[in-house]
Length: 359
Image (cartoon, helix red, strand yellow):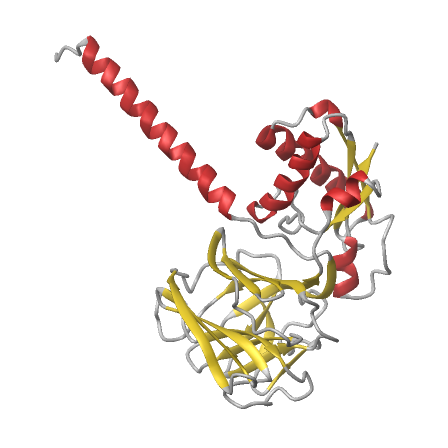
């Protein structure tokens, strides 16, 4: 048997500790880079839940073809784009100077490639009723994102610049068979894009100034058959500090959960971090976290789910950010206190929320 000397043992301990520290630092670094904050006011939402399977979704427009489908291993309804063309949610009005766009996608294709290709993602200043405005360079201004194999490219354009202006790219692999969360955050000219937990772009002048953006557009070729769900556009910047400290109540849409589950998803990190910072800066602040659901499903189950989600948010603040548990109470109201009638996908999205009440 080989003898382990004291020096060898010490070296091993130091090496293991060093690796552990490096791993911990890497995890923290990755988490800190995900600074996405969803907009305060939901202005468009579609999860296709009320659409009949096989139909084209009623809130969307296209020059091609698509249908609502179900996918094994997932509970949601999905919108699959089946032919080449544009696919546009029929929103009303511009998105404001500050807005966010989020959706889940399985970027399937029929050419057998394991990586995403054949789909462009565009934010456009144009005419919703005239999607062909501008032709190949749609609208009056915009930014185009092209995830293609192992690279994501971008370019922007405007009438003022008489065509394309700037462009760039970043390395990012997106698997064609995996569900992935996309998020875009626009603050005036600043444009940020996130894929899963990765911030892919942070462009200070990504959006052309002096245009009002009002269209999000999927553009596909014949090889791409992507599926999307949980599509949301929200406007405005959440003022967490003012809402909690001065107004005494914050209605947050910054917490994401899978359908019928209470575990807080990683996309909620930035909202958690902001609330934790407010509590650390104000050590006497105590809050109550209240979960709310829409009216889909059983009343009793919704009530239980809302309570468990509130507890889950508290757990993240206590365990992840070292907030004293004695400063946080939790409750859940289920579907009993809707902000708006549960009569559309948009209204249901407004009712699914987490509230923070100053005690």
